[in-house]
Amino acid sequence: MMLRDPRRLLRVSVAPAAALAVAVLSSLSRCSLLEPEDCVISALSPYFGTKTRYEDVNPGLLLDPEAPRRDPELLEETCTPVQLVALIRHGTRYPTAKQIRKLRQLHGLLQAREPGDDKTCAAGSHDLRAALAAWPLGYAEWMDGQLVEKGWQDMRQLALRLASLFPALFSFENYCRLQLITSSKHRCVDSGAAFLQGLWQHYHPGLPPPDIADMECGTPRINDKLMRFFDHCEKLLTEVERNATSLYHVEAFKTGPEMQNIVKKVAATLQVPVSNLSADLIQVAFFTCSFDLAIKGVKSPWCDVFDIDDAKVLEYLNDLKQYWKRGYGYTINSRSSCTLFQDIFQHLDKAVEQKQRSQPVSSPVILQFGHAETLLPLLSLMGYFKDKEPLTAYNYKEQMHRKFRSGHIVPYASNLIFVLYHCKNAKNPKEEFQVQMLLNEKVLPLAHSQETVSLYEDLKNHYKDILQNCHTSKECELPKVNNTSDEL
Image (cartoon, rainbow, N blue to C red; front, side, top):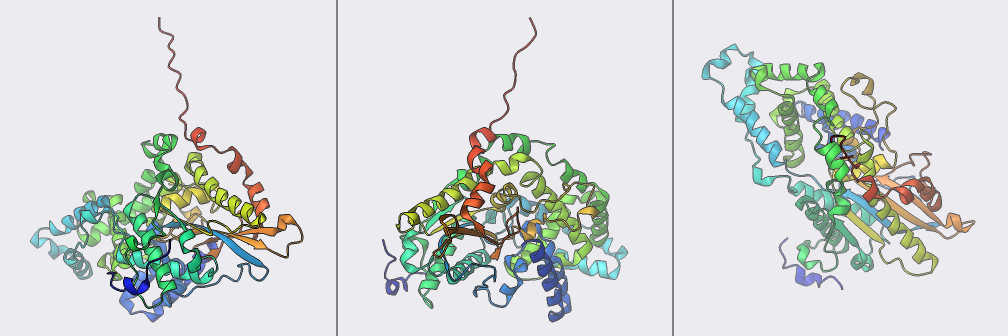
């Protein structure tokens, strides 16, 4: 099938550690170019965890979000890309209904103050509290994590950049050979649709993108067992998700001195009793700053409640949760992603086999749309961003320079890309097929060697245990309970 006549469609309505340092420095340097009141936003942006904007990880996109930036480490000349497999987190989204309810609770605390209470406030504190009380809530529960217009834009622009970076793979002739797989969550389905709209813009510059229904070739296919594997692993659900003690370090950090100092500080700023606030409400207040920045492009007065030291503590709280729930905290977190990892290599194996038979690659581009919770376990399975010591409630200062910073690994629209190359001048058959990985459009060095490219067979051999011995049915099986009794 081919795309419909574009004239007719006119009527249709429309790396990690180094990268972290660059992003932080770039963010801070931009402060000098901004109005003084905007500098807080720029300074806090690197610490929003999984609520981080993609352009804060790739600051160059602020200048031109559609221009591809070719990493100098990408292979070229004698090696031709023959397949691309991309795992993509959805674009910018609204807060969840749960977060919105907490935000309403926080807003209610400000609204509930007695008229005479402000007499005891310092002038600055009074002005900020008044600004917060007057600041519109702006979010309703029906929004519940849906993709916002900025999120659609994230995906369209990512599509434009990737199509320009790998023009042969994303050629118009290959459009109907694209494979799109997505989580059932609307923000992921919509992200897939937005990506296709971006490809349409690439093929037909100047024409408005059509509705997804008019893109006959690229309708996304829902596969939650692949993209939301964490919902289908009984051992993970039982031992981590539903286990009240699995996030011990998260809860301990909430009541620890670093977080409690922030609770007291915010209580004084808002002129509310400390007992009315909690670490969860403080975190929601911090995320409100990030949501307003990412979704609306505005500076919320909530950003003025926190300084950089506060932001670092709140980032660590978010990272603790991701570490123990989706990262290295428990082995099952990463092992539950084996099926997804194996699926990626099945695509690559098939492409290699087809090239060896001088056949066209049947699926030059595979796009899989999921969540931060899809990407983090997979990267952990592959050995990336692992610190020497675990993240705990008690080693915040020791982990100031940690590798595991979720916001610089899986911001909104984050992507992990496998590119398979065919090298025609290879010295031997083993060197004929090579692989590079990109994280957020930057070449990702191999976790085990720090090389920027690997022979395909060597990469498979390195991950041999996962590819051959990690079976989800066994990994996710709960240990059998011995129900025998000694009672007579």
